[in-house]
Length: 282
Image 1 (cartoon, rainbow, N blue to C red):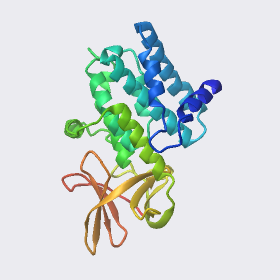
Image 2 (cartoon, rainbow, N blue to C red; image 1 turned 180 degrees about the vertical axis):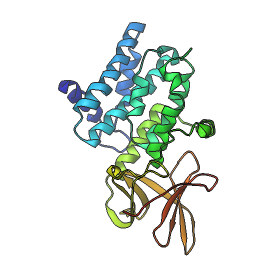
Image 3 (tube, rainbow, N blue to C red; image 1 turned 30 degrees about the vertical axis):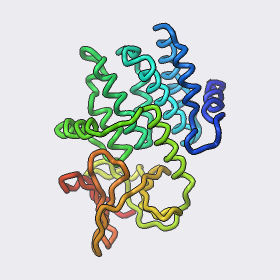
Image 4 (tube, rainbow, N blue to C red; image 1 turned 135 degrees about the horizontal axis):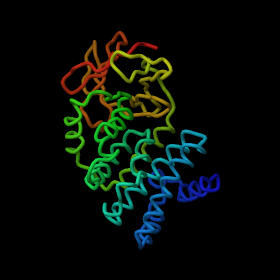
């Protein structure tokens, strides 16, 4: 399997060192277009599943490797659907779901949502995929964007799904590449100023110190970011007074925002202005 990992990386990074070309989509497209039979397509689905379950989960050594493998797998899933249609997916195939579950970049998670929507409609009858919809997939969005869990909040799932479905999406395979390209460009930035550091928290009234901290930073491009797990998300200033600054994560889907007071108190609020989490200074 180490050979499989090396092969994947040679394919992924053999293209030009250009911020728009981290993945050789044309090569992926050619190999997927050459799948002519149901058996070949089924074998390819299994290959993606093995890349996730063995290469990603057991053999990946760094965060950079893990992120690139997960996004490469998501791109390939998108290309299968874009090339062969959603009919190429069968309910017993798990690859499309596990690659999304193991993605930790917010904008790639969002870009992948149309694939989830398409494939859910092909799952006829009750199975684990349907039973986990939409909670399992919404969780992937809420955690990667806001570090916030929707566990036991079924009452707002429909509202959030409607928000996601109301977004205008571009071609998924291309959007995934562009989102990852931006993510990598952020990783080249240096910290200019630490605005604040707080304890990470997934639930309103439950602090898990093992999660560590997160920060709001001014980076070397003079823009403001939120940083968790060494991943940066661009923050846009929505409103600013002498006592309060309102930040939104760039292209966030739920219309939630952060409020930072002039005394360093930080909270996450929903679109109604209700407090979701009040963070403790770290």
